[in-house]
Image (cartoon, rainbow, N blue to C red):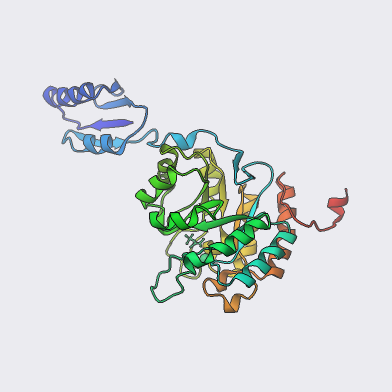
Length: 343
Ligand code: PEP
Ligand code: MN
């Protein structure tokens, strides 16, 4: 951390700030005479930054490091729910936005499994903008999630608050924290204490730092199995539901040691744009994809507009396999026989 002091600072003002640093046990070096001080701190805590800024003689405080530390530890490849995240293989989580009906969900689960998918998504609880929109089937859906698990699928389901954990913990292999809850710190602390992997989605307007600090909450409580998910951010563009920030993939992988996956369904809000953005994510180095797939999107109770039909999903999978090969990665699934594959 670097602090820039007022140009016409007198000795008393200088001693006051130096006295503060000494009392706090912070080592520092003078850079430009007595005007710029370089502070050696293990972690650039928000509280210290704020305290320094409160001194009238401090003009600027610049971060040169970070206030997160645990997320930096390399955790990849990460074994979570029997799947390797951040290895050569790129796992796919596919399924409907919400679990709507048992028969429909299990039939879809079987189709997805035939296509090579290992993990199915399906929320029992939906965070909806309007209270009049479909809110999810709730605890009634647990038996259906268990049936999907009996097929051998890994179940990913969203937990919106601490109370829902009682329902979801026994039936979800990976607990999802949705975008709206990325800053629900009491939920993050609770999930940090659980022995279950967490898929943490980026908040609608969260910076990388805020996203990583949310992950830090989980890690600080002891949960090491954290998967980050870029799902688009809110920008001035209104044509798409969100703006999928593909840059987040290389940046977050550089800043954190955690696997980073991408959700182009919520990232675009339109099924037409899901295939190109899914391919872009693979090309950019994603460690996984989350894709909404519905057998009948026009009748879906939520997010039908951004859901792929099974046929569209199946043809996308083949394209994704080709992109993955081009960047030395692999995607499971029934492979297309091409000249390249035969070679
Ligand atoms: C979801 O994945 O079901 C979801 C609600 O996504 P997000 O939290 O990214 O909006
Ligand atoms: Mn959805």
